[in-house]
Image 1: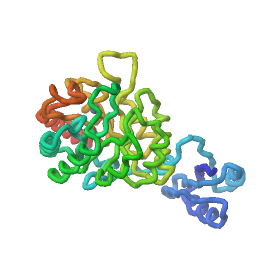
Image 2 (image 1 turned 90 degrees about the vertical axis):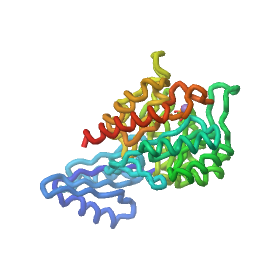
Image 3 (image 1 turned 60 degrees about the vertical axis):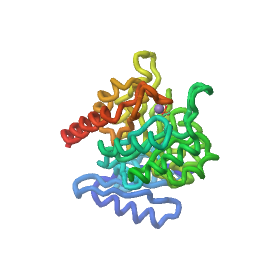
Length: 338
Ligand code: PEP
Ligand code: MN
């Protein structure tokens, strides 16, 4: 196994020199070089087998100030090796690196009229991606399980009618063929550590919206992203959706600090889901604003035309009019931040 090594140079020329040195030695793989000004230290990132003790050799060079083999368990998702923000593209939408995604739609697709109507309404209010569940992970086996393949078909119709790209959850890798026209595949909180599913999704090149598990640490979320990325799929979007705590006034506890922490540790875009985080529609606006102020690259908000009669998560769903109001506030906050 190879692990990355960060080499900090004593002056700005170091990056190029290390680059040349390393290219001549087949034992090294150059992961990238960042060069700064003449006065600042150069920085080089190498990848080298763990078995090889190159640290001493590098440290003995005059131009090298310090050498650090990175021991963090996640590498591809790590900002240390990929300092620039990753921008994930989903149809016409972009997420990350200054691009903001407003993802909105019902918890579950219920009918053509419902999903097409909501798609058009949320687009009007500034949504850039339509969400809608077809395969639903429900706590009770007796609760509505989603429309399945029929739901995906209706989402595709809504995509055509509205022009919005679509995101929907996968629960079983055997259903992957059905997701051909889906722009972003969601891995729900309950499947965040379904490693076989993550590995298979890593073999595709579809953008993956990876939701934080109900009781998972940020390190575990990043390790799950690593499972997808280590198979070659770099299009991963992280999603904070609230975690389980002792609090009972809200469905979960929104971890706002997850947003700056994930941005520090990783180059992947981070979106926030204030709907599942709070479970109550009246708190969604405040949490959406807080997430945006904390630097979220996007929001995922549940919107239903008739929340009282929704087949799933009605209590946390906004009406299209309420979503419009949240969208305006979010835009105002984003403008104030720049
Ligand atoms: C959802 O987005 O509808 C969903 C089920 O979310 P989570 O996996 O975060 O509970
Ligand atoms: Mn839901």
